Each structure stands twice: as structure tokens, then as C-alpha cells.
Length: 16
Image (cartoon, rainbow, N blue to C red; front, side, top):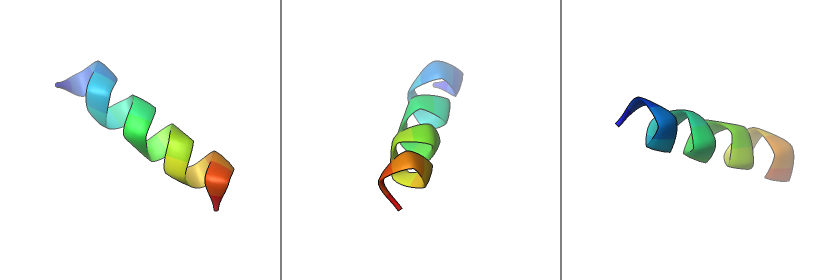
């Protein structure tokens, strides 16, 4: 779950 959550957060941060 950690990698998935981190990936999602990073993607959102980069996208935002």
C-alpha cells in the first residue's frame, strides 16, 4: 500500500 499511496500522492502533486 505504501508504494501505491506514495505514487498517487506524487502523481497528484506533479499534476497539481
